[in-house]
Length: 185
Image: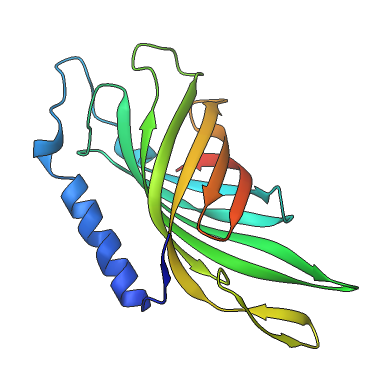
């Protein structure tokens, strides 16, 4: 996977284009029995932890109601900030990684309200993902770059507004495991 520095406006423009393209009605037709998601549950707050490098993980995700590729699938756009700790002797630092992913989620459309779901996402990850660029009093520093990455996740609904999700994020040089609670707003 090729890592390249991208300006933030270029990343956000590419993501916005992908969202508009994915929301096109030509991608999938809704079946007669499939009901659109209620407007109050199109956004979710994400709170959790990075399991590998021990740091907080939080963000928002937005379900795109018109972007359905097949029965049981939904599309969502996720903005996450995943902090991870780097240790160098006695010193440690928290480094943030921004993850902007477009995801496909599958959940059995005939099941009840409390059931598992899984999916994958592709997106842009931004943060200290590059080579070590130097060393300071607080420890080594890493190049801030943008990289394409992927996400695999598995979750389950606990209530109609709460779910728990385990995710594997991977880029060329970084792998992150997160455990998050999703609170639908």
